[in-house]
Length: 173
Image 1 (cartoon, rainbow, N blue to C red):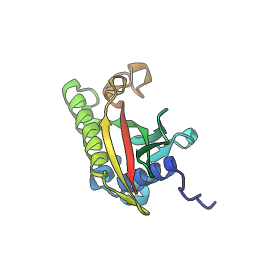
Image 2: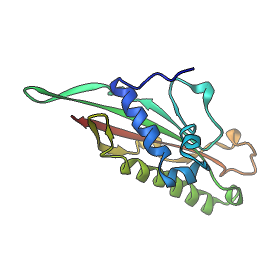
Image 3: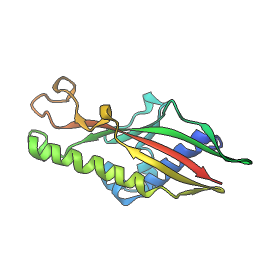
């Protein structure tokens, strides 16, 4: 099936994030992908929950404030909005029962992804340059481990983790 082109404000933003992240070495390493296309398969959209890949992966979700337009001059409107990046990670098998190293691995991975996203600010799509106003970790989105009952093996409580990053963005056209 042919993929529909990203032409809307939110679609274009999600597309630049998927494309940009899938080309960053740190993201390829994190998700264990050998190529940009394999890494891109680890970045899914909110509308495809059945297509969630094996961990690690991320899901791009529109925030309630997404897709607005902000007037900054009499004749200039800049599309602005927000996206949430839901991160679903794993800890290397050597550390899944080790609290100290499990937490350190989770934090290293999560904040490396935050840095990857920050590096995408300034990306050009068509004639628009995307600028991030803020990359925030919401209070309820701090990285944390899945409860033991949700872990594949309860004796390995530091295997699966999740976190969220909010992006406020705008375009300069």
